[in-house]
Image (cartoon, rainbow, N blue to C red):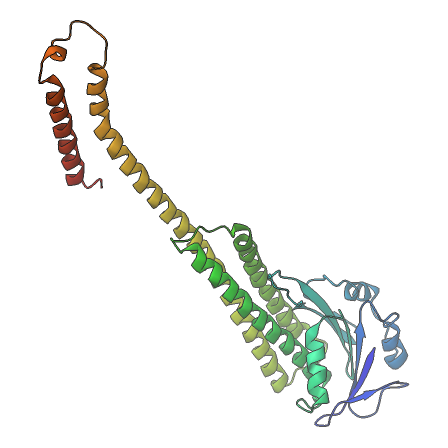
Amino acid sequence: MEIFHLVRGQAPQRIDSLGATPTEGFIWLDFVRDRDADWEAWPRRLLGVELDPRHVQDSRDAGHKAFFDVAPGYDLLVFEEIAPQGDQFRLETRSAALFLFERLLVSVRAEDNLSFDVLKRRFADGTTRSPGSVRVLTEILLDEMADRLLAVGEDFNQQLEELQASLLNPKSAFKDWAQLLDGRRDAYRIEWLCRNQLKVLERWHRNSVFEWSNPEETRLHDIGEHIGLLRDAAADLERHIEAAVQIYFASTAYRTNEIVRTLTVFSAIFLPLTFLAGVYGMNFEVMPELRLSFGYPLLLVVMILLAILLLRFFRRRGYF
């Protein structure tokens, strides 16, 4: 657990212990889900507020989807953050539960919710001063999560564009179908994630137990715009992948048709030649042409002329 005392405009102070809520500013209690036990006792100890057991259960679920709910005295906001990615993009999320009281913020998160560490580093180096309210601090955290979502989305977009370029390259045989299909699925998941988070932000704005100030509403609107941009980009990328796959199969079918047409032309040319060769290859005694001294060269000339005529016929028809 980490405890921060924040007074508007001042540097956030990390403290080791807390007996009561300070008279000035507000407190941020940051808990790691799998490491800190009995964290739900802190709101009761500091404010005399009992948390809804369902909300406590929701906060313990690392895979919980974005969610908002209200209870007497506090708001519950569950938000999803993109987990650290490896070499191959696989979309995984980690939920962070934020309990918002008037002068207390309780966060319950996974250890690899990187946005929290980023904000703490900004506190330490003086880049970010203490905000004026719990809601503004929450919006700063959500903004960090949205920025990380955008950054990961850009890397994901670049990987899929490379796959798309390889797919449409006629000189290379495309074999990364599994990765492409996984990418298309994850693009849809990013779009769905963004849509869900936008709905949660809207519900928070509409149903919060606290009154919103104009700066807080403006910041919330900016966060929604960031998430909306990624939602639209993911939807466009999904459509581009589908279009690329359709183009690939169309071009493959076209090349196949060209090959089949060429083979058909040659088959049509050799069919009468094969017929003539078959007729004069029969072992009948009464075949007058077989006894002609010029029969063999005559048949060769006929076959050559027939092949030339068929070639010219198919060429004029545009078959090759």
